[in-house]
Length: 337
Ligand SMILES: Nc1ncnc2c1ncn2[C@@H]1O[C@H](COP(=O)(O)OP(=O)(O)OP(=O)(O)O)[C@@H](O)[C@H]1O
Ligand code: SF4
Ligand SMILES: [Mg+2]
Image 1 (cartoon, rainbow, N blue to C red):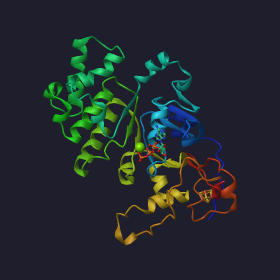
Image 2: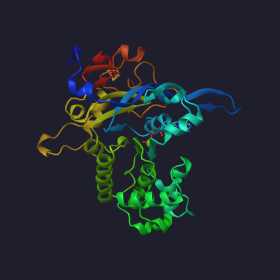
Image 3: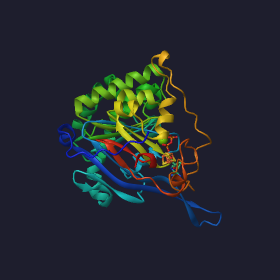
Image 4: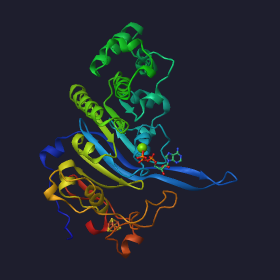
């Protein structure tokens, strides 16, 4: 059934009262692809015109199949990779327009935690020194103050003070993720982009790290952009969820709303793959045809049309606009325009 777009005269008070921490508008990241003689004629459209925002203090879950651009989106927001186009407003400033020096000051507030924190730790450096490193980069405190701060943060992430003097190889996967978190939090950031922080961990350890992330969020008022492919993890941790497909954000909504009322055929397919908690309420799994196309030469119009069970002619020709169907529920699909 098609729904009419509802016109809302005013935002509900709770919505309008929420402050945006990041406002991301039309960001693109195209990676050049060189041919055999070194000439760039094609681009990998890893992130292609993505618009969304993060409210202060929330957890925003980002989901989508492997290769849809989740990590590139996070890395582009933090300028770890040069953006192709777009704007990211943080504290009223477009951080893409700042000089490297100006951005370095803002960077303290914007940190990232990776799936494999081991790769970002120097194997020959003691953990205490690795955790202190971001403070050295941002010229925070003297060596004594930094040491005190590291001991404090070790305690916050549930590590023994003795960890300060140990080396990365002496820790388990879950402990290394605690170290990764300590390194991100030591400079007291506002936003932490968590890129699959629990995907490589055993299930029992995953829940410990998720509980820790939630506790730290409450204690420090953190905002998380949480990238994951496990929908049950994302459902548990997120206030709102964004669904990506082939470099585009196809739908976003508050978590309960998205699960109760998914509007985009791709979201519907993704959600149909999660086992229902009540086996009597078994839902039918929607199997998508074909493989995810290459982001080098993505399909015309709606990039999902090659796999969408509901595609019509217009889907091949026109890119669907992002529309707000109900407050905070955005979708890009011709069936919803
Ligand atoms: N440095 C790069 N150079 C060229 N292409 C890249 C680069 N980094 C990523 N890509 C491509 O961009 C697309 C998006 O990749 P990305 O790693 O952002 O996806 P993802 O959603 O994080 O996937 P996963 O779930 O596997 O982590 C992929 O096609 C990938 O091959
Ligand atoms: S725009 Fe068309 S192809 Fe794309 S999701 Fe909607 S119905 Fe499917
Ligand atoms: Mg990734």
